[in-house]
Image (cartoon, rainbow, N blue to C red; front, side):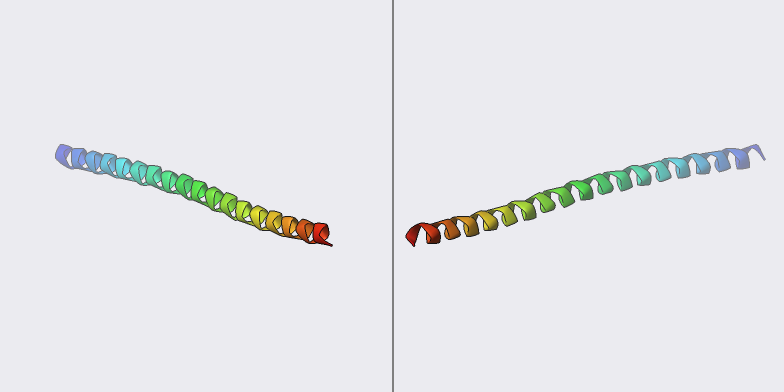
Length: 66
C-alpha cells in the first residue's frame, strides 16, 4: 500500500510540474503575441502617418504652384 501512495504522490507531483510548465509557456506566448500586435499596430500607424504627410506635401506643392 505504501508503494501505491508513493507512486500516486509522484504522479501528482509530475502532473503539477507539467501543468506549471504549460502555464508558463502559455503566458510567454501571450506576452509575445501582445508584443507582435503592438509592433504591427505601430507599423500600421506609421504607414498611415507617412501617407498623410505625403498627401499634405502634395497638396502644399499644388497650392504653391497655383
